[in-house]
Amino acid sequence: MKSAHTQRWLALAAIASTFTVAATAAQATGYPDQPITLVVPYSAGGGADNAARIIAEGMGAVSGQSIVIENKGGASGSIGASYVARAKPDGYTVLYDSSAFTINPGLRKLPYDAKKDFIPVSQAVSVPNILVAAEKSSFNNLSDFIAAAKAKPGHYTYASYGPGSLAQMAAELLKKDTGIDAVHIPYKGGAPAIVDVMGGQVDVYFANAASSLNYVTSGKLKALAVSSDKRMPELPNVATVAESDPSLKDFNVYEWNGFFLPAGAAPDVVAKLQDLVQKALARPETRDKLAKLGLTPVGSNAEEFTRFIDAEQARWAEVIKANNITVN
Image 1 (spheres, helix red, strand yellow):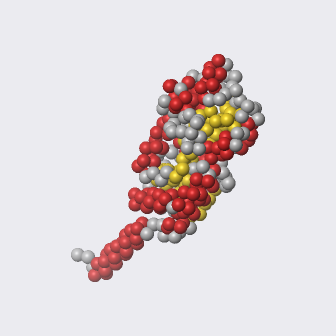
Image 2 (cartoon, rainbow, N blue to C red):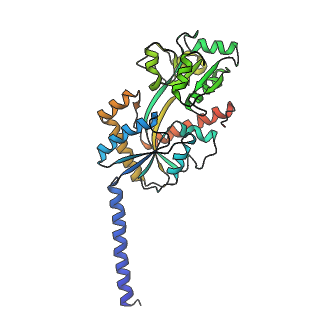
């Protein structure tokens, strides 16, 4: 038989346990009830950072909590992603990553497992790429470039904003699907790549539409094709890549940004962060600011984003293997 002292101790322990469970449930129910750190694994002032700050402002307005941007750039985003992978999965440390998240696993030895260490929450934005050439280029469309590249394998060049970037992957996918050979010229950012394409030093470039559309509409660059599945409303006379060649019917490439939580985050936290992102993206103020950057709000749910991430990672792994792509 338990002593009276033991019985009192057990009763107090049960009460304490009940309060602990209740407090934990209340904390989850009230998420977010403290500031959220949004880790952007790229430098301040870049495309992902600019979009993240706009969306974070909307999230703060919706939730009443501060959304603090923390830039942890380096190694094509993998330093910041690794930091979040090791963070406490309580919903208060969130990764805001880009297309590189699905490219890196096929190119680099990473300090995390992209599939096992993260929970995709919501795709935030997307933007197509425009295959551009110099205004004085002899190419008037993608078919012209493909024909020339087939006639002179290894003669023509394409730019990217860095090894392993989506700009490189889009061009390598084009090479894989058409059998052409073109030489990769990587740059440290999109701005110098555009300058050299305009000057004719490099033949073509799958440029982010947000950074290149103004150059196209002003006549400083020539648009050969767009990478999206539909024509851009701003460029109704420019065909998609898929329209340009029968072998490219499945070509559909977008740059994107999205939200991730560390593995182990509670399902209700995932759902509430997803809801917070979607509400922020639904705000007219948020949408208008993103539109000025050339970005289209998405706001997918966690299940949709997970399927998208899996498909993108598989696609780029196949391209990397087929084209024997490596990075130094």
